[in-house]
Amino acid sequence: MLKTLYFNTRLHLPRFSLVIFPRSIISIASTAIIRIENGKLAINDSWFNDRLRRYRSELRLDHESTLECQGNFSLYQGASIYVATGAKLKLGNNSFVNTNSTINCFKYIAIGDNVNISDNVSISDSDNHFIDSASDKITAPIIIMNHVWIGKNTTILKGVTIGEGSVIGAGSVVTKDVPSNVVAAGNPARIIKQISSWT
Image 1 (cartoon, rainbow, N blue to C red):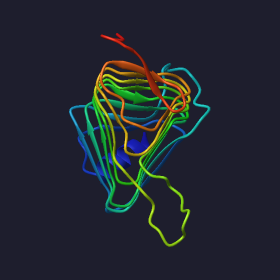
Image 2: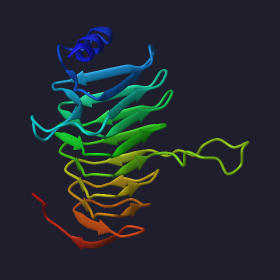
Image 3: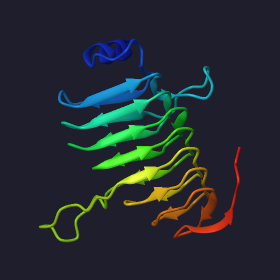
């Protein structure tokens, strides 16, 4: 409760729009920007009110980074978000990231409305390492459109757009764009069927 009060006040956010549950790790640079509109961003949320939080969630925003949340977004226990210096992360309404999943944003990532991201998913818009020590890290935006379901143990690599209404099968590695209203799975992920809706 004290962290929630402190960060909502410090960041000049609407009342209790950033909700920080126990066992959360929060690091927000003084020059970072958080915008939360028409909802709340919950850190280390739980599906069950009486469930013990065995894991820690982390929210880390480096200098001059931006996090925009349009509606309600939950980071469930053990999931983490990192936004690097100067990078921008956009989060949609009624979406969530489940246990032990990570979003690492080094340039630009956008996640739409009604997006379900399952356990142990990795989303990163950067190679995040050097082959040649004199070169810069290579980044490319990731865009996940509305109403997407991403299965457990999936990796989404830089430069990928996942179209509206699509499903990514468990254990997939997404290296290329996925069109709307399909099921894609495998390593690398390939389209395996068309769908009209997964609701």
